[in-house]
Amino acid sequence: MPADLVIGAQWGDEGKAKVIDYLSKEIDIIARYQGGANAGHTVVVHGKKYIFHLVPSGVIYPNTICVIGNGVVLDTDYLMKECDDLCKEDFDVYNKLYISDSCHIILPLHGIIDAHREKNSSPGTKIGTTGKGIGICYADKMMRIGIRTGDVLDEETLRDKLKLFLARKNEELVKLYGVEPVGFEPIFESLKKFADKFKGKIINTSYYLNEELRKGKRVLLEGAQGVGLDIDFGTYPFVTSSNPTTGGALTGSGIGFQHLSKIYGISKAYATRVGEGPFPTELFGEDADNMRKLGHEYGSTTGRPRRCGWFDLEMIKHSIRICGINQLVITKIDVLSTYPTIPVGIGYELNGKRLDYMPSCGMDKVKVIYENLPGWNTDITGINRFEDLPANCQSYLKYLNEKIGVPISIISTGPDRKDTIVM
Ligand code: IMP
Image (cartoon, rainbow, N blue to C red; front, side):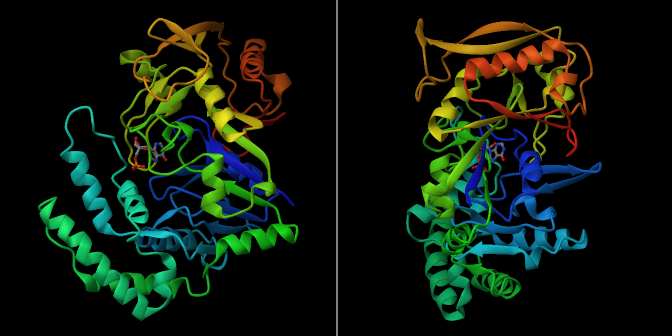
C-alpha cells in the first residue's frame, strides 16, 4: 500500500492536524518526520480540543500506530509528559508509539543556548524561534556530536557519550554564553527513565515502516511547520532548522520514494506566520488585528499572536513545485466570511520586474500584485457540502484551483472534525 504525506504549504499552522485527524481513520500507521516540540498540532473532536507537540496527532484514532521518525529532534522529558497527559485522557499511547533509534535528543541546554542566542542577537537577525532548542539540536546533529535515542538503550554507551557531549557543550555554555555548566547526573537519570518508559519501543523505524508498507499497511507521514520555514526552500534565515518538504519526509522517515502516493499541501484560505521574516501579503494595524481575532490566530506552542495576511498564490505554487503536492487542502475558509472583498496575492515584482516564481533571495523586497475577489458575507461555519457554500465562496475556491492547477480535495469550514468538505 502507498504512503500519503501531509505538508504545510505556508509558514506552519495551516491546520495540518485537523486534516491528519480526518485522514487517519483509514490509516494504519502515522509518522512524524521532522521538527520537534516547536510544533503545536490542534485537533477538535466533538467540541474537545487536543494539542499535540511531539506525538503524531493521529494517536486519538484507536486503530493507528504512531511513529516518531529519525528526522525528529526529541525532547524526551517533554515526550514523557505529553504521553502521561494523553494516558490521563485514556489514549493508550505507550502501547501504540514507536520511536526511531536515530532521533537526536533535545536536552534543556539546547533551549538555554537557543534563548541566549535570540536574546543577544543584533537587530534584524533575531529569528523569533519557539525557544525549544530546535536549531541548536539540529546543529549538534550536523556537527556529529549529538546524543541519539538509540544511545539510551545501553547504560554504558549513554554514560560515555553523554560525558563527552557535556564536556563540549559546557565549554560552550560557559565560554560563549557565560552561563552555568549543566550537571551530568540529572540528565543521565532522566534519559534512563525515558529508556525505561519506552523499552521495546525505540526501534529502527525506517525498517519497520518499509516492512509494514511491503505488507500492505497504509502509512501517513505528518509534517510539522511548512515549506516557508524549510531550511533550504523557506525564507532563510527566518526558518526552522529542518526540511518540512517532501525531501525531508523521505529522509526523516527513511521510506523509499516509490511508496509515496497522495501528497497533501495544506494552506489556510489566507496566510499567517509567527516569528520574524518576510511575509509579502502581510496586513498591519487594525486589519491584522481583525483577521487575528476572526481566525483566533495565536500560536499553540508559544501563545504568540500570529501575523496575518492574504492568500499568496506564488508561495503555494512554490510549495507545490518543490514538494510535488498533488492534493490541495484549504482550511479556515469560514474566517473570510465577513469580508466584502477578498484580495489574493497573484504574483510578485522584484526591482520592477515581474517574477514567475518565489525568489530565494529578496523576499523582503517583493511587491505583491493583488486581485480582489468578491466576498460572500454569510457565515459558512460547519458547512460540509460544496454545493451548500455561497456562490462567491465557491467562486473563490474555484479561482484558487484554476490559478494553482492542483485539485482542491478537502475544504475545512470550522475547527471540528465534522466541519469538512471532501470534494
Ligand atoms: P524554531 O523552529 O523554534 O527554531 O523557530 C524558527 C522559526 O520557525 C520561528 O519563526 C518560529 O516561529 C517558526 N516555527 C517553528 N515551529 C513552528 C510551528 O509549528 N508553526 C509556526 N511557526 C513555527
